[in-house]
Length: 286
Image (cartoon, rainbow, N blue to C red; front, top):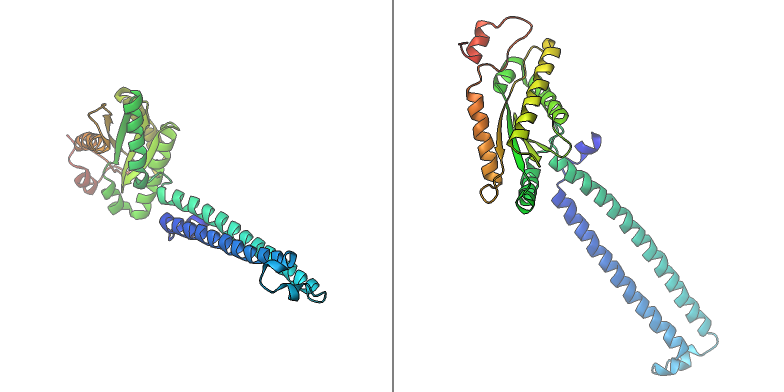
């Protein structure tokens, strides 16, 4: 959690730019090392073939100068090696740190902090890939749009802490209900989207019915929470050459709202009978 919080202010784009700048520093280091190596190589060549370099032969061939020059070049070569090693070591450490921070930042950027589900930043990428795969292989693909019924009333009556807790509980039920291959996204405040690869509408309906069973079980086991969870869902199935990401989401969203409009209750106190205030929140019973 501490690592996640420390990276909330760091965007992946900024870390990627830092990593690119680091690669530029690496290139500069290699160029500097190459230039210094050329200078040292020239110095050694002067010592070996002094007559080829103007009138330096008289200088370097003197017995008292030759060892000093040779030692000086060796010392410079050693210092260069030490400097290059230290700088390369620092660059490697910095690069590993940046890559680690980038991986965490990318993960944080795609995860909803409250629920632990994916957020909408991943939606276009993932749904686009699944649509392309379904189009290419002829496999099925369905999406389910889910909405917490009367979530606004829950927040108004019990407070935002209870509302956050309800969102976390719903996220837990979604993780338990859907397969590992399914992608669950917190689409908006109290809306969730499930992408179901290799699933047609009938299979998505089974998953939605199973989820409703989990919600009913949760409500029976948590009556002391003082509120009742209820979800409204809509399903859309991918149709080759006729569906895209936007149309799929719109179809599932429209069906979800149509189902929600027929819901007669949402948040209700389970510890005591519904009061007149609660009835005004949820509508008169038929």
